[in-house]
Image (cartoon, one colour):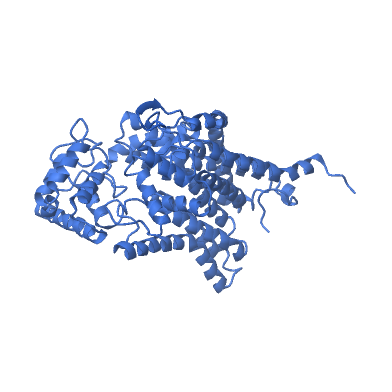
Length: 591
């Protein structure tokens, strides 16, 4: 009997290594503190209120102007953790682990080296963006975006690379991708950026099957396979229909949210298209002068005028204007507090009446739409002049370079929560997470005779400092190698492009699919960061820190996938696949 070689013994240890570091990643989630912003009425607090209602079995609760303002994905995630009796931090870590495992498994039909698979898993498991203060530590919906991006793209890659395999091996990947995509769509209202990648790969897959496999499959088999390849988009459609139907039952309106659908969304879009008499600047999407003119021609809007004008004044900055999309929340506040729209149907009717009156004013010439050739990439933001695009694109590419180096990826042991202590404690208990409380707290002494202001010594901050320090050191390693590896990935993509072109001229297309996937992931990262640049152009200097590590958190994981896919494809293409085909070890294997 042959004695096992050291290499074989080490290969058998790979599952133990994987389990150890996965457990460490889960422990890291348990040991870091979380930042609960209980005073964020339109963001963190709103989504938790939705989660409380979901857990109580009353959908999103009684209707108010904010009930349908944001996607239901994050509240569902919070409730799932509660139903599974898991701390939120554990489920969040498991999401990252599952996403990393799926990416490795998706590529396992091409990359069979168990050591490479293990390394790839560990690199994604400890992705710096999944260990970042504004993403991970803040109890808000951005926390699950990187993990869900990883799951959706892994699913689509896995399906694409298996389209020539038996249907039973394609179906799980199609269902996974469709369900993940449907859930991802409900996390944020701007998730449309992911569709180009899904749509292009779907067209490629269906076209390939029809053109290349029609001689190997019967008509029924081709039809069934095309259905499976279209399943991700079909499940996305079904998911949206389901959410809309539930909202129809509970609120009488058939829409997933009223920020991008329905009369409110159309009304805000019209506001962004209106031309003011004075130029307010690109930071002001709707000027106060435009608001006043709209009030003058809309009898329905005039019902809110005293309250609306008061709120406009409250939200105005030093120049007297309201920046960015803040007017949409001003309008919601006025509608909510006026009592004119006690339910969703009356709210849609109210917004619809204002919309009709403004359209009529445009037809009469009392209001005018912008005629400056502005492009509207989204119905929920201002138009962008063609002359602005080079600047935004340049800013996008500069920040892609920064993100490639994992800038702004760090945790903090003193990430302070804000808001009332009772609200913070309620959200902390709901998630079973550790929160760092505000520095000062007013408390009643034990004898109940005196009340004093004392420094609240937060043991959670001390308890977590060691783990936070360790994780930040790991992030620092990524930051050292991030940009060099990105340059190497771009070089690998260039080499891969040359190789693909050479192969097409000589009848070979071995790496064509991986090239398309690599380009698709990179372009998706650019598209997402470009969209973030469009939306955040009005941010003040103190808000700039939110653009990359918060709104652009999905870009970090996309660039990481691009790096590993491009470099790995060149590496695997330079060695003999047969060298690994006899290896049964590894964390991913297709049977």
